[in-house]
Image (cartoon, rainbow, N blue to C red; front, side, top):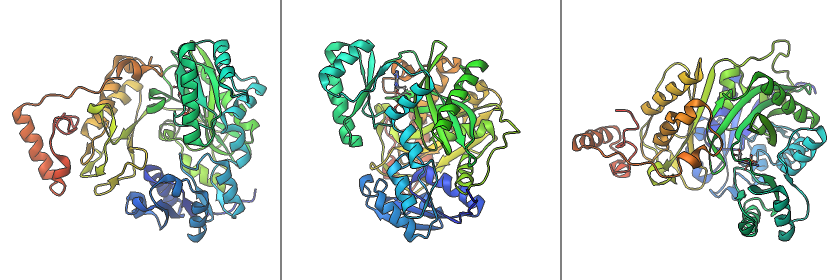
Length: 495
Ligand code: ADP
């Protein structure tokens, strides 16, 4: 492909990933067009983009998931390329195709590669052909309930039913006995239909002491796929990641090498270009390919920190047809990096989402700290979208030091206006099983299934908290009433 310099990129996304892309573009001298919904007008990405175009109202189906609205917006904004970020249309092959048909460069893999790898059932078929290890299961076309129950029995309980078109942990249920299988399969089918527009499901053996380990791969413009090493994402709630780290504390060098080779093999055989992630489950020294995510991943910064790359810039350079990463100079991961996803939710009420206008926000400076945030003071956190408001990333020379640093950074971080999961994250990071690195994907279910206990404050502590809250945020004091469950009051700031 002849290199083609991109001068303006449309961003079909919002929040912190939109900001992340804008920053990479700014550094590369590329202009940006933010394609945003009505409620996202005025948020941080909106303020930063060169141009902004409103593509529809708040509901995602009318804006961020509307292919035509995004294409029209990109064209109206004079963009040559579209970056889809993650989530929304990022893994939608029809969107990639629509971009190409409209003469826009889609910053991501080809529609064909996305159809091969992004579809869980197709991906498994290719993995099988390549002789890669898969969790035993059933991916057949017969979707009759009786047949699915029969297949679940053949696989053996516990097993897991998943939406073929699924993602983000939705449409997934663990089946523990034959008696409950029918009801749970039907409920997964209903959920799959409403969330993904297809009721097709498949079954897998449920591995109940597995770790989630994934490999960042990158297909460059020449067709070579690079191995950018692994991340461990075993800390999950309802199958969704909360804390990620690079590299995994659990792999031997031999297993790491084998998994990396498997990841590159499947990507290369699908003609994969750009950033992608090959996910595995790892149990008792064996690994099993789970799925491939054909896009940039939320947790990409931990790889960037240990490998020393900029994945978003690499995506843009690849879309321009330019070379990235020097194969003669093999990448070696250095030190340890951890990312925590900061959610606007109340950990004292079991994580119920917390909405409102953000008050004072403070991210403490220091070596080896990185903040990816999409919202600042005055921005509204609404119930229309994912409650992730920021990511906190740290790097240090060893894993114990990275954990120590993350706890300190979280204690010093300040977010007013909404509740956050900061106290919950600190508890997780301090838990002996996390510290030992032995946690499995059932870690949260085992140790953190109950809401956090609220700390009881003395009268003097309450007074100090109230006074500081007033001084820091006098304008929206009514939003920040010091209640028993206020994050401020419960000392997550490490007073
Ligand atoms: P999604 O695309 O919705 O993220 P995945 O297939 O990637 O779904 O699985 C998400 C998480 O669900 C995994 O990281 C793991 O914790 C759990 N999971 C999925 N399949 C299995 C399985 N067969 N056994 C045990 N846990 C599983």
